[in-house]
Amino acid sequence: MRDVRAWHLDEGGELACVAPERLWGVALEERRPPTDPVAYHGRQSKLSDWWSSTTGTLVVCGSLRRTYVATELDFDPEVSRFAGEPVELHWEQGRIKHRWRPDFVALTRGGERRAVVLPPNTTGPQWRERLSALHEVAEQADWRVQVRPAPHGVRRDNLLLLADYRQPAIVDDAHERALLAAFSQPRPLHEGVAVSGVPELLGMDHVYRLIWQRRLQIDWDRPLLPNSLAWTVKERR
Image (tube, rainbow, N blue to C red):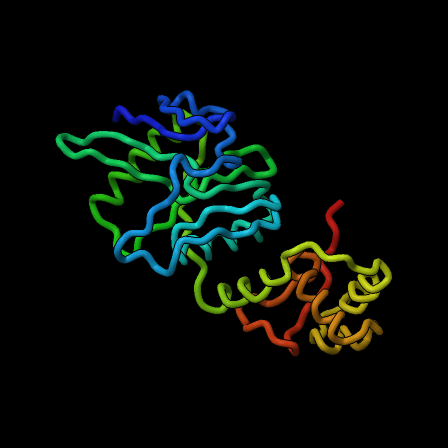
């Protein structure tokens, strides 16, 4: 068992250093990183924040790959809240001192807290050591470890397109009902908008928003285009 210490900001915004068992129930999914992320050689793109439609807050993303995962977490209906790099783990392995931040901490709607990590492009001893240490922390803190690769290919492209429509918008209820009714059976996006009677530009924007909200479904294995098929998601009872 490693002697791991966890650094995070407490409810008052003060830096705290605690043993893993003291993380039990701590709402890290609502916290900023203990210190601001620092760019390093080889980091893809620039440091950025992701505005989350799930929480209405900014989520720290230290790389482009993390931004892609933040997009997917934001789209995931199981996730109620998440934060980027809210905890930093410190431990020693022989003479080697380790310091590492899991990419995200997320809370599910069922109340499960997850440490979400991206696998590196090339795994090796360092990755295995970090993952092993994280599993030890998770066992003591009542977390679940989730290794979540960044989305890629068509799915990533579709997510990034739809994410442009994640911001809240004022929508006419009659227009929304007409659009959902038009897609009660699978049909191309542009055809459904035409059938609904909603003005084309307004209708197409809201169709993309309904897909982001998971109220319309699409084939995620195909690029999302105006002639892509979409259909209404049945409400759960």
